[in-house]
Image (cartoon, rainbow, N blue to C red; front, side, top):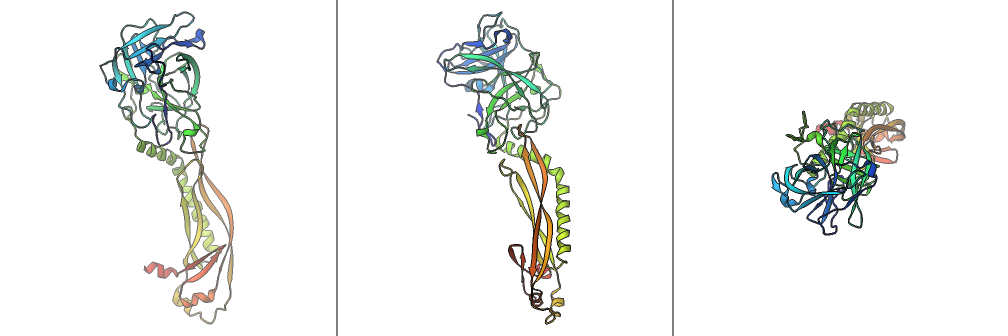
Length: 414
């Protein structure tokens, strides 16, 4: 099992299965069963899915390859077998792995990293291969996922599902463009044993491979609305002579991400939505600050009391601003001249203003949206003018709170 900051990721290997080298696979719909999709069994105990992309080349996930042979030009004889399921026009057929040809970088502690491998069969397969499409995956593009679901009897059923790709989602903050190395599909329900399933166009071109999955229970953002998330490796990153060549690949195509990368990418994604609002946010707060100064006759200067919280999916308000009195805006010497002239008593100012905040909301795909929100506030400011003639700190009551304030000139001297 892999994990990440956002998800406890489940890689989609099924382990263990019946200890046998042949993985029996049938098509749920024999009339529309693609010839290129294969069931994969390695070391007689674990199963995945793969796809034939050339006469004798199968693509699958790197984590579906035994750890000791995850290297280019390494023999896989006797370690991996593939099953081509029967269809209306084809009988069930089998193939043996000859050599691991090309693999992605070593896997890290997260599924949000490239995860692919290509291996050569011992002989050409009597099936039509599926061409690779390296044009990339667009936001909202609906991909056809051909996956083999293992059964409790040790067999597999090839099924077809449709999954929409979702960019700029906290489910996968790295998926921000058509050539991003790792994509997210929401909703896309998959299961163990689906690893390596091809992500196809309607005309059966392969745009990527399924890597892993996450569910609502795995989301550290607690009540975030996205669910049944699946991740995939984008073949826009593939550049293998004779197999696929991507023009202008993404600069992160060879990067294996770690947990700290995910935290940074998530923060950057949220900032893309909050930063454009900050100028307006600050202007709105300053407007209310000016109102408070005017309503309190500039007897005191006010300060902003801002509380910032990390977004956790439950507490949507990430920034909240209120106001508090800061200091007495009179000269102490001037106030002393008023001794005896100011009667003991209480002065009250009625205050009306807005308290501002910034909220983040997620849609069903986990995409953030930032909003500025305000609420009306009413309060009173009360104090005794006579106390200010002493030149000592004075108690002010603002709403239900009391503040002991110094003169502003004393604060500036410090």
